[in-house]
Image (cartoon, rainbow, N blue to C red):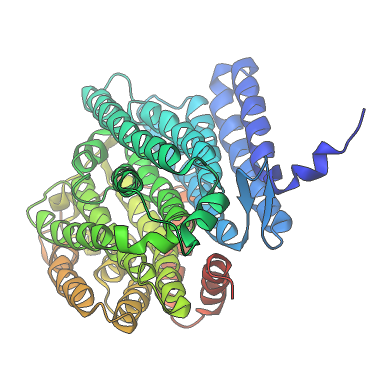
Length: 493
């Protein structure tokens, strides 16, 4: 038997390994004793994700294609996949105590995360409209199940149903956009589309423009950008807290990676058709994220509006990448965007780990008032949450300030002054509700203590994310070099 096809599949080795590993983990869970299966599969899943991360780093060497040009492996994919795999591994790590406490510690949970992660990696490496859709749906189907994972909770069931119905609608919008692009261009391959649209003598049909609008709408839903954000607060509040943490981080980063790849790749020369749309949803997301969170009392709903705002800030980089002309300026927008997404990962991961520690008498509490006096009852957790809140507010010298600095600088260089000014003003408004949490922890009358002790895994995640958030400004080199290499991969030369 010839082994010729196997070297050709090498760029997709991490995804192939993850798919096979997910099936094996499923079998291990089924055939292990019920009381042991969840623990075994959880730790095995973390090992699988770490091995996948190592494979991604080893395999990525320049830009290589496989599956007939439908799958691309490059430095940009390496950067986004690294963030996604870190987020997925950490989610499994911090979720065990919650799952045990609520009686839902089943092996299916880590397997669903692994399958969703596989979909995300496929999305990020998509080089064809069909592979894009397959990756997106593999991720989405796993997330629908995860939202309703706590089956005896009506809130969780409602969250799963809302996410499924609205997600199906968004997938329909996206698929309609993809079919319009295919119908008017005659190809689904990104490289072929790029060549077609960079031709000097091509007139872009109106159908392509309408298709791009539908594609942007579908992807905006996946990143919770306004006006496709309506599902986010209810799903975040109703879903189990570890699921909310996962939703807020990994799928957002992967969808942003896909957003960047499709908009700067096949539709890069059609920026005049989509830049104004991106500017609108960026401004709308920043403003709604800033003002709608002010009156929230549930911390998970507040984090939902916070994530909407953060996606608005990140989309400033996409708007900069839509400035036709100077390639360096366009790359600068993606560079700032990637730095922002990496910092977003650590800030949110640390915050949600703290939220998972908000439990009294083995029962989760979710109101901001429940944090009252935390500085006196648990000073270490209060200090960690303060670091994350200050960072999200963009207060120097924390990591969140660095992310916003690079994003706003890229907008100013591209002469999108209005976008930068609105971003800064939205940050000022948003700082109010982050600082209100700090005020509640340090100046309000203490509530009853949260349950102790804290597990080693949770402590480890808080320490690592807190250290990155606090000290990134001293050692930014690896992140800046990684983001520079990733953005350069999209704009060679």
